[in-house]
Length: 68
Image (cartoon, rainbow, N blue to C red; front, side, top):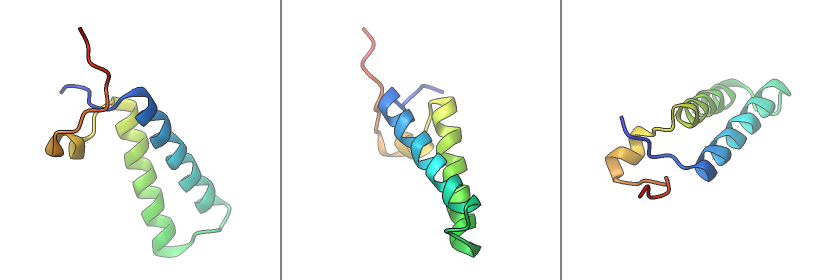
């Protein structure tokens, strides 16, 4: 599994995940929307931790810098 998520992309994903968690636990989002945001936030956090995004792989996107 090759990494395809760069540093800036990782930071953005983690920030979105943190915002989703904050919105859920403060009660701003509830019900299905809140649960959906938590799932999306979890997926974003996981892909930033492992530096691999399956959707990027399917679309041929790579945000990692080129290694020489």
